[in-house]
Length: 182
Image 1: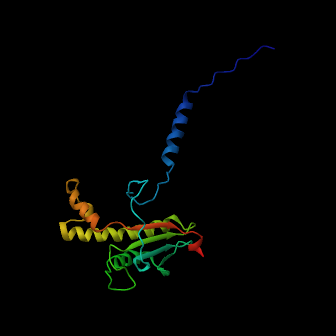
Image 2 (image 1 turned 135 degrees about the vertical axis):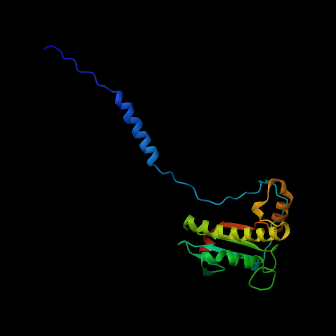
Image 3 (image 1 turned 60 degrees about the horizontal axis):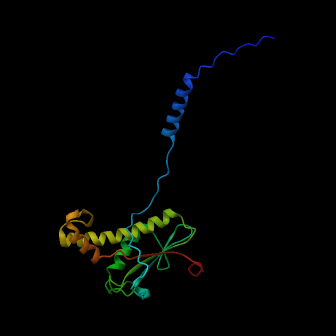
């Protein structure tokens, strides 16, 4: 039986189809974007010369992000919308109310997060606390320099440094452990 030759396959349009599919998938795919808060961490010092500082309980503003994403401040249920205002009140109390800090220098905000809490809940709590510090910095910068803290230019490093020294970002963070959960 004689052998029949197969007709050649025209593969010229295969490259066009592959390219079209590649473009389609690139355009229709959405990439996950990270959510977060920009924080500049201090440089690591392997031999710190500082001794741990004792902080009185009334100078610690306890913010707890619970497992279900709810918020507790000083052990009481709290709304995220009120956290910024309450943090400012705590930081600027200056000993007027015995339930709040005795001074800004002694005050610390402690954010404790349950290990199973939603990340968005932690981020919301952190953002509200940080915005309280930003508000204090802006108010001080406006009163001393006539502009907001974030509006300082590169040539105004001294003023920016003064504002940062006056209102240091004092946030302690911790994932709740067994002692905190019980």
